[in-house]
Each structure stands twice: as structure tokens, then as C-alpha cells.
Image (tube, rainbow, N blue to C red; front, side, top):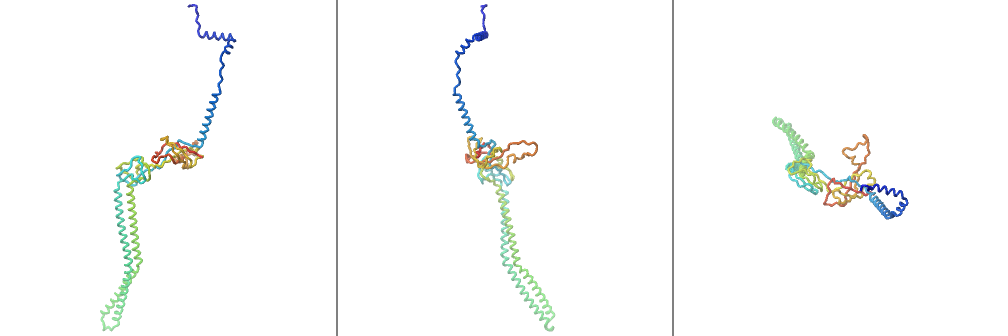
Length: 382
């Protein structure tokens, strides 16, 4: 219908508000009719108190269990690793190992062509045989000289005695020829006696000289002894050359210096190698941990402290060990380019010091940890 009016919700709200302001008594009655709000009980407070106590206990327990523990994530596995290189040159004729193979000390790893070394050894053996033969000859000459030279002296003395007798006879003949009546002899006989006298004197002088030479028996024997000593030195020299040849021959066989694993192999059969050429690396199975702790963590850390070790590669592996030693210097001090703190502007940086940790338990003897693995040690300090 045209005269009927419509009212909006806003008009009704305004009208109700006006009615409430106009009737205070009714407002009071409405408040009395409303139910009262219940106050919160003690149960939430109790729960809150229990949670707070539990948190305090947990925090206290965590502090008590970790206050004597120093840890770092800057720690890695380490072991002895050497580069295997030959001392002989030649072609590789045998390769006895594969990549990452475990070997024992003394195992044959590589064989280099030994023919050149064998020829040198045979030549040295021949030189040694010749030197020994010459030594035996010199020793025989010495034994002969000990008999020969005294006999020669005696023979020289006998020749001297004979020459003296001949001289006496010649002198006697000469005196007879000069003392008789010239008519009873001839000038020829006198000249012959005179010549015989001079010859006897010459023979005596020669015999005396022979005696003087033959009398040097000790010097002659000493000369033979010196010859024997020289031959002995030659034998020793030849033996040394043979030892060197055998040593060079042994270098053609590369042996494992200790138990370990073959890594980084870069040699094949037929490869021409030179002395000092790197063939591969040999890693020892005896692994330790190098942990780089901050210098502020070392105050109470001492060798012998127990360590719990976790390996990132095998989270379930739990190792136990102890602190072996603390390096006498920070890592930066022994780096290739140590910091020059006395030059330019200085900014203090907390240094890290390597700590060696030896593994005591938890590692399978047949299992070795590769080098450079990340680990997390927890050191219990006293």
C-alpha cells in the first residue's frame, strides 16, 4: 500500500537505544537478569606452574650435562698417507694392485723391467770374482815370500863366502907369481894372476851387494803384505759395487712400506716411469681425528680427556676416544702464508688450534674411515 512505511534495521537499533536511555529502570532489571561470569579456576595456574618447573628442570639438567663438554664441527679424519714412488726407471711389467685395495706390509705392488739392473749385477759379480782371484794370488805370493826371501839371503851369504875364498886364492896366486924367481915364471902367468885377483875382488863386491839386498827380508815381506791389503780393498770395492747393483735391482720391485689402502693410482702396465714418479698413495688404516677448537675452548682441555665422536657419513656409528695432544700453535700460524699482525689495521679474530684425538672404541678392525670425513667430537673436560 502507498501509505504503509518501511523501517530499516538501523532505524530499529536507534529506536532500541533511545528506549534504553529513556528507561534506566529497565536497564537495571536487564543486568540483574543476566547470568554472572565465572572466574577462572586454579587448574590453569597449576598447569602453568608445572610447565615452568619442568622447563627449569630440563634447563638445569641440560646445563649440568653440557657444562663440561666442548665440541666443534670443524673436525676431520686424518691418517698417515704416503706417495709411493720408485727409485728405478723403466717400463712397468707387472701391476699387482687395484684401486682402493688393501695391502699388507711387504706385499709386491709394482714390478719394473729389471733387465738393465740384472746386467749391472752380473758385471759387478764378475768384477768381484776377478778381485778375489787377485787377492788369492797376492796371499800365495806373501806365503812364498816368507820362505823365498830368507833363502835368498842365505844364498847371497854363501855367494859372498865363496867370493871371499876365491879372493884369498887369487891373492895367494898373485903373491906366489910376484915372489918367485922371474926365471921360474913368465909375464903371462903374472898377468893372469893379477887378472884373477881383480876378478875375485869384483865378485866379492857383487856378492856383498847381493847380501845387502837379500838382507831386506822384512821390507820385502811387508811389500807383499801391502799388496795383499790392496787386493783386499779391491775385493771390498767390488763387493760394494755388487751390493749397489743388487740394491738397484731390488728397486725394480716396489713393496708396501706398511699396511694400508691403495688410492689415487695413476700407473698401468707398460707405463714408462722415472725415479721419483708418483705411482699412487698408500693410506694407513690407523685413523685419528684432527679437531680445530677455538682458543677459548682450550682452558680446561688436557691430554687424556675422554671424547665421544659422531661421524657425519655414518650417523649411527658412535666412537670413543681421548685427546692425544694439542698442537703447539694455531692453524693460521703454520699456514703457507701466516698472518702479519704487526702490519696495517688489526682486527682480533678467535684463532683455532688443532687437537689430535685418538680413537679407542667403536671402529671395526676391518673397516677404515676415509680421510677428510667430517666428524663432531664432544670432549668431556675435567
